[in-house]
Length: 196
Image 1 (cartoon, rainbow, N blue to C red):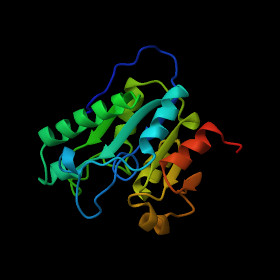
Image 2 (image 1 turned 180 degrees about the vertical axis):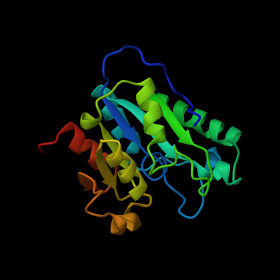
Image 3 (image 1 turned 60 degrees about the vertical axis):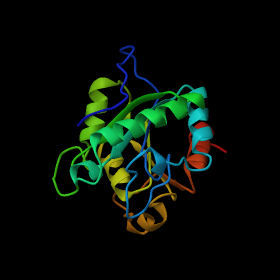
Image 4 (image 1 turned 135 degrees about the horizontal axis):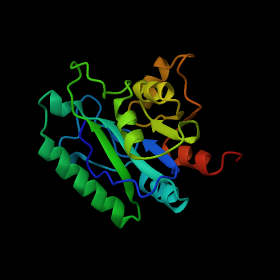
């Protein structure tokens, strides 16, 4: 379960963490394909500003993402590393620092413990970053994001970008997000102004 761009915890105090899926939430997801290299990566409208607002509100942003294209031989670890480095540079230019990035690199059929909806990536993050699950959001666009978040005791928010419109039909009462929003922008509005 490699993590790229992870920073060591600065203290033993619990941090205000936001877990966010990558493809389909932060950047456009080429449905039926993969973000195989940096030129395939395009920020969703409003996502960069939403992330900047979270940082200004002192939330630490942690990316949790399945990247099965590596395990399935579609693209390489080196390509993912390069895409991640460019993404981090662009985010930094936009005033956004990422607290950590955790990727599952296994193929879809490998039955690993880190591929969402399993909670391995969240468990790894919890060993390295202190946070309170019941006060922590996980924002995703797939049922597997909601399932992983719910199973780990997080507050889940669902967005309709990426796979969201299609996966919305697959949500069930047992594992249902706290709220559903058109995009990351509106999800962040809710986190920062829950009574609005």
